[in-house]
Length: 207
Image (cartoon, rainbow, N blue to C red):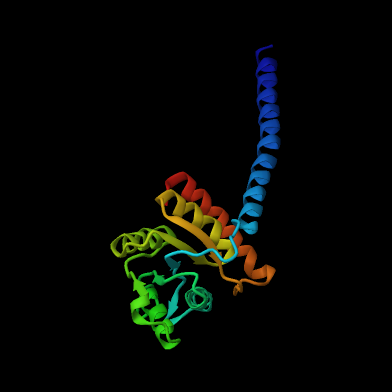
C-alpha cells in the first residue's frame, strides 16, 4: 500500500514537472524571439536629427588600423559632421588585444586623414565596453559643455546602446550606420544572439 502511494506521488511530481517544462520552454523561446525582433527592428531614428556631438562607439583595431566594422562607424560619424548634423566627434575605446594604439586614437587618425579639423575631435582611451564608452563620452560632453548627442553604431547594436544612454541620462538620438559589415544571415545571426544575451545582462546587472 505504502509503495503504491509513493509511486503515485512520484508519477504526480513527474507529470507536474513535465507540464511545467512544456509551459516554460515555449514562454522563454517566445520571449527571446520577441527581444530578438525588437533588437533587429532597432529604435526609431529622426531623419536629419541634429546634436552637439556624435558619440562613435569603438569596435576593435588591428595593429593601428580600425576593423572594418569600426571603419563603418567612423565614416558615418564623419558624414554627420560634414553634413552639419553634429559639431564635434567623440571617438571612444581603449587599446585592445592585438592593437598597437587605442581604438579612439585609430579613429582620430582616420578622421584627420579625411580632413576633419583636430579641434572638432574628442577622444577617450579608457573604455573597453559599450557602457564604459558611453560613461567616458558623457564625461567629455560635460567637460566641453555639450548637451546632446547622436549615438553611432551598427544597427543591431543600436538598441542596447540607446538603452544604456538613456540609463545614464544622456540626451541622445540613434544614428545607425547606413551600411554594415554584418550583411549576410551567417554574420547577422551570431551578432543578434550576442546582443540578445548582452541586453539581458544589462537589464539584470546595469552594465
